[in-house]
Every structure is written in structure tokens, then in C-alpha cells.
Image (cartoon, rainbow, N blue to C red):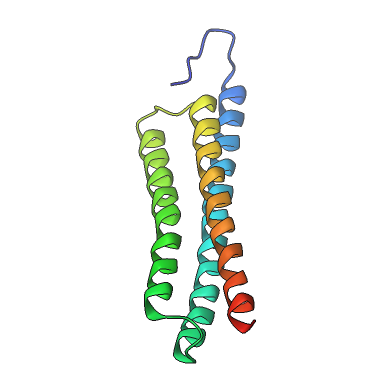
Length: 124
């Protein structure tokens, strides 16, 4: 929790609140973008599965792999919002949560990249 002392002005506190809200919104936007990417690739994999280029088991595995990081990020955002609600958030918490969510985004991005390689490998 952020500790205010007598030298902290309301403006400083308000600036910090504004900065933290912007970070939360940016994280929510990144999660949404990754979900959109996942949906696009899921549609492509379904097309490939229906054409016989990937197995239903493979498609199911990819879907599971995508949901894991998205679920983790969603829980982190929800936890951050609850912490905010009860005044338990400070810059350290935001920075740690941001780093953890960015790790999940990178994980999901790698999974998506790997999945994009599957159709190319199947074609060869």
C-alpha cells in the first residue's frame, strides 16, 4: 500500500492514481488484442482441421495452450482491480503485475507464432 506523508500533495497522489489506472487499461487492452489473435488462429486451425491438415486433438491442444495464459492474465487483472478497490495497490504492485502479465503475453505470443508455423509444416 502506498504510504503518504505530510509532504505528499493530493496532486501527487492523484497523478499516481491516474498513472496506475492507465497501466491497468493498457494491460486490459493487450489482453484483448491477444484474445483477438487467438480467435483468428483458432478459426484458421478449424479450417485446417476440417480440410484434414490438422487433427482435432491438435486443435484442441492449441486451444488449451492459448487459454492458459489468457486465464492467468484475466485473474491477475481481476486481482489488481480488487486490490485497487481495497487500497492495497502501489507502484510496486503495479510494476510486478505488469511484468507478470507481460510474461504471459510473451508466452501466448510464442504459442501463436508456433501455431502459425504448423500450416507451413503441414504443407511440406
